[in-house]
Image 1 (cartoon, rainbow, N blue to C red):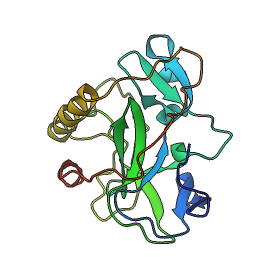
Image 2: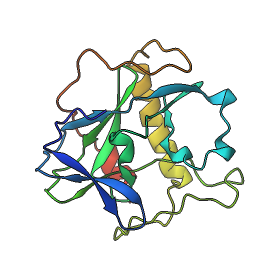
Image 3: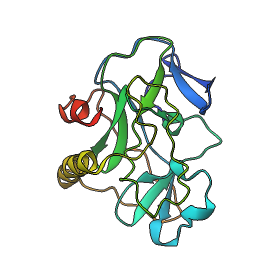
Image 4: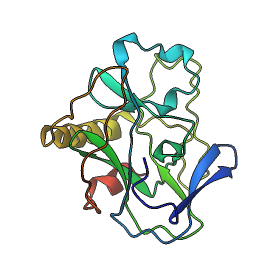
Length: 193
């Protein structure tokens, strides 16, 4: 769900990555862009191998992920980049997307997918990166040392928040209120190559 009004963004076709989100206006650093909402999925019962669109799953808890309504525009359309201009912040258990730097009109809004290090569980890995960034790593998987640093930061964030109640198979409800901005932490520049 976008928290910015639609005069700030538009859905547009991108080269090689399908739809993406393009800024129509300047978006200042720290601005909250949206909340990743959708149906709550039980990870233990979900067949990721049969889901060719599995990159839409967003971590919620160790038992649950969020799967968005792909028939509507939303922040689930932000594409991966090795040099993203947006990031994820955990707020009351919700995954808020926000700008980690000023974003100019005409720029694609991008996020780093933060996939775990590549291992044998990702057979014939489909997570090749097509972002075209100067420092593109050619994969959406993080190196192990970077992933461990991110995981430590994320775990600390999770300890500071409470998870909103949820029911498997039902939509995660929006929060009653949202912050307008998120403070930018140095961890983001440490993760980005």
